[in-house]
Image (cartoon, rainbow, N blue to C red; front, top):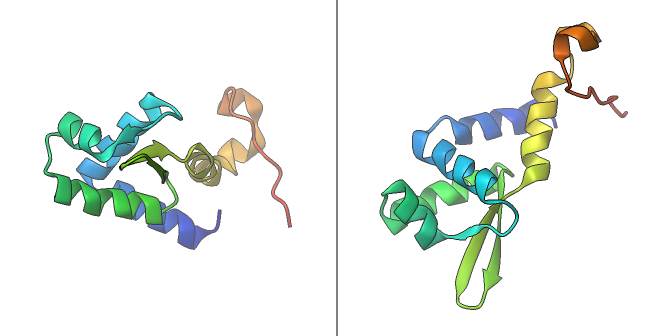
Length: 109
Protein backbone atom coordinates (compact mmCIF):
# COMPACT_ATOMS: atom_id res chain seq x y z
CA UNK A 1 0.00 0.00 0.00
CA UNK A 2 1.30 3.41 -0.95
CA UNK A 3 1.09 6.43 1.31
CA UNK A 4 -1.63 8.03 -0.83
CA UNK A 5 -3.84 4.93 -0.46
CA UNK A 6 -3.20 4.79 3.29
CA UNK A 7 -4.20 8.43 3.65
CA UNK A 8 -7.46 7.72 1.80
CA UNK A 9 -8.18 4.74 4.06
CA UNK A 10 -7.44 6.71 7.22
CA UNK A 11 -9.57 9.56 5.93
CA UNK A 12 -12.47 7.15 5.43
CA UNK A 13 -11.99 5.80 8.96
CA UNK A 14 -11.78 9.25 10.54
CA UNK A 15 -15.57 9.44 10.71
CA UNK A 16 -17.36 7.62 13.55
CA UNK A 17 -20.17 6.02 11.53
CA UNK A 18 -17.75 4.67 8.94
CA UNK A 19 -15.41 3.28 11.58
CA UNK A 20 -18.33 1.58 13.35
CA UNK A 21 -19.67 0.21 10.05
CA UNK A 22 -16.28 -1.32 9.26
CA UNK A 23 -16.06 -2.81 12.75
CA UNK A 24 -19.49 -4.40 12.30
CA UNK A 25 -18.49 -5.85 8.93
CA UNK A 26 -15.17 -7.17 10.22
CA UNK A 27 -17.01 -8.96 13.05
CA UNK A 28 -19.67 -10.28 10.67
CA UNK A 29 -17.20 -12.13 8.48
CA UNK A 30 -17.19 -12.77 4.74
CA UNK A 31 -20.96 -13.34 4.60
CA UNK A 32 -21.46 -9.61 5.16
CA UNK A 33 -24.68 -7.71 5.77
CA UNK A 34 -27.22 -5.79 3.75
CA UNK A 35 -27.18 -2.01 3.91
CA UNK A 36 -30.48 -2.15 5.83
CA UNK A 37 -28.99 -4.42 8.48
CA UNK A 38 -25.97 -2.16 8.87
CA UNK A 39 -28.17 0.95 9.05
CA UNK A 40 -30.32 -0.66 11.73
CA UNK A 41 -27.30 -1.73 13.77
CA UNK A 42 -25.89 1.81 13.63
CA UNK A 43 -29.19 3.65 13.98
CA UNK A 44 -28.63 5.77 10.88
CA UNK A 45 -30.84 6.54 7.89
CA UNK A 46 -30.30 4.51 4.72
CA UNK A 47 -29.21 7.50 2.56
CA UNK A 48 -26.67 8.53 5.18
CA UNK A 49 -25.31 5.01 5.39
CA UNK A 50 -25.07 4.74 1.60
CA UNK A 51 -22.77 7.77 1.58
CA UNK A 52 -20.56 6.22 4.27
CA UNK A 53 -20.44 2.80 2.59
CA UNK A 54 -19.38 4.46 -0.66
CA UNK A 55 -16.47 6.14 1.15
CA UNK A 56 -15.35 2.84 2.71
CA UNK A 57 -15.62 1.09 -0.65
CA UNK A 58 -13.63 3.80 -2.44
CA UNK A 59 -10.93 3.44 0.23
CA UNK A 60 -10.76 -0.31 -0.48
CA UNK A 61 -11.91 -1.32 3.00
CA UNK A 62 -15.22 -2.96 2.05
CA UNK A 63 -16.67 -4.76 -0.96
CA UNK A 64 -20.23 -4.99 -2.23
CA UNK A 65 -21.99 -7.78 -4.09
CA UNK A 66 -25.49 -8.25 -5.43
CA UNK A 67 -27.56 -10.98 -3.81
CA UNK A 68 -30.99 -11.10 -5.32
CA UNK A 69 -32.47 -7.64 -4.90
CA UNK A 70 -30.10 -6.71 -2.07
CA UNK A 71 -26.56 -5.42 -2.01
CA UNK A 72 -24.45 -7.20 0.58
CA UNK A 73 -21.45 -5.43 2.06
CA UNK A 74 -18.48 -7.20 3.60
CA UNK A 75 -15.12 -6.17 4.94
CA UNK A 76 -12.34 -6.32 2.38
CA UNK A 77 -9.93 -8.19 4.63
CA UNK A 78 -7.15 -7.81 2.09
CA UNK A 79 -7.55 -4.03 2.10
CA UNK A 80 -7.72 -3.89 5.89
CA UNK A 81 -4.63 -6.10 6.12
CA UNK A 82 -2.76 -3.84 3.68
CA UNK A 83 -3.53 -0.87 5.92
CA UNK A 84 -2.27 -2.71 9.00
CA UNK A 85 0.81 -3.84 7.06
CA UNK A 86 1.44 -0.22 6.06
CA UNK A 87 1.43 0.80 9.72
CA UNK A 88 3.51 -2.12 10.91
CA UNK A 89 6.02 -2.33 8.04
CA UNK A 90 8.87 -0.87 10.05
CA UNK A 91 7.62 -1.92 13.48
CA UNK A 92 10.31 -1.55 16.11
CA UNK A 93 12.99 -1.73 13.43
CA UNK A 94 12.04 -5.36 12.83
CA UNK A 95 12.66 -6.61 16.37
CA UNK A 96 10.19 -9.52 16.84
CA UNK A 97 10.50 -9.23 20.64
CA UNK A 98 8.91 -5.78 20.45
CA UNK A 99 6.47 -6.40 17.59
CA UNK A 100 4.90 -9.43 19.22
CA UNK A 101 3.25 -11.97 16.95
CA UNK A 102 2.88 -9.59 14.03
CA UNK A 103 4.64 -10.96 10.97
CA UNK A 104 6.61 -8.31 9.18
CA UNK A 105 6.41 -8.84 5.43
CA UNK A 106 9.27 -8.13 3.11
CA UNK A 107 8.64 -5.14 0.89
CA UNK A 108 8.57 -6.09 -2.76
CA UNK A 109 10.08 -3.87 -5.38
